[in-house]
Length: 207
Ligand SMILES: C[S@@+](CC[C@H](N)C(=O)[O-])C[C@H]1O[C@@H](n2cnc3c(N)ncnc32)[C@H](O)[C@@H]1O
Image: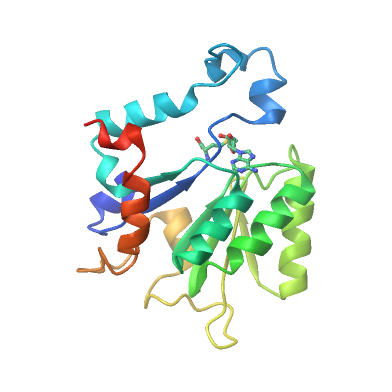
């Protein structure tokens, strides 16, 4: 995602919320994937790999990890008054988990912002039912494509118009329509206090 933004000249920062403890439904349950947990004394070490990848690909300055549950991170981000232009949900895959993430993180989406959900497909019935319920309750037009779903948070009652002029959700996500660059956005979008908070993590200061 960051690579795509960079190649299109979008100065962006990404907050990554994950426990980095792995998916209960795949990594923990499926013996074919279990090795990916990289268990050390029974505890996953996925976060170390994530940090390594971020350093190696020189993305570390634009990425802010919050290693906690999505619910805990929501309350923290709310305290920091974070409002995102794009939120991508791909955490728990059961109905209640997805519905909770949608309900909470919708509050952190700017009007005109885009919410994208992964795994909107028959293989993940809980994901599908939660998204369907949420968009029906909010009366939001939703786009489904390539096992993803997306919708726009209305701006003054207009559901189909993203806040950024010329930004059409189907075009961004399906056909690679360039997203308008927003010069000088860095620093406005991510609160300095949150930036400082994330950088306090020992993995990040060891550079
Ligand atoms: C299917 S993986 C996707 C990871 C990432 N989006 C990617 O594509 O690499 C789901 C991730 O959600 C995390 N996860 C599951 N439940 C979570 C929760 N309640 N809060 C935060 N992270 C969670 C897991 O640790 C796992 O890394």
